Length: 138
Ligand SMILES: [Zn+2]
Image (cartoon, rainbow, N blue to C red; front, side):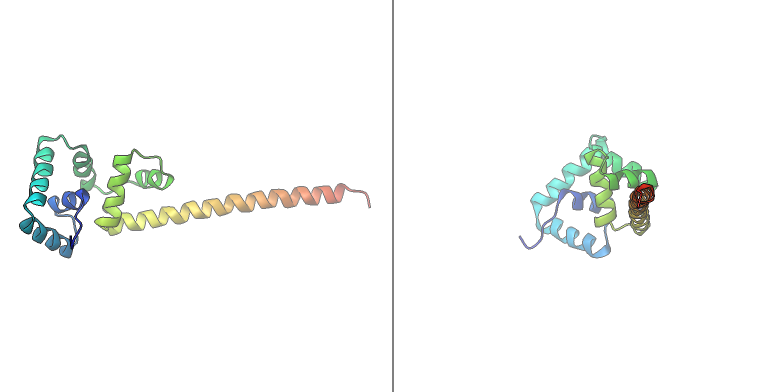
């Protein structure tokens, strides 16, 4: 197969949420591959029936982008798989600039926070070392 089209690609295609060349690639593949077209049809009808939970999350979430809390939880890896998959898709496949920027910002925040903790710990050790030194008779 010259192209691999995953379920998430079809989801994005059905929502017209992919970059233009991705949309074109999938549209072409759907025309050429009846099995793939059937698969897309199944997704579409499930979504219409409201049975596809990822689709539901997608529809609910794509109206507004992801919240800082959701992105923060995503970085911490504490979200349910479906939502984490959706966020990954939204950011990496759809390439939402807004959420990418938010996520980068949060990543930096978490890194800085980690650094601060490290500095604090070092200071603590330094001061207790200083205390021990001072308290030791010469
Ligand atoms: Zn977004």
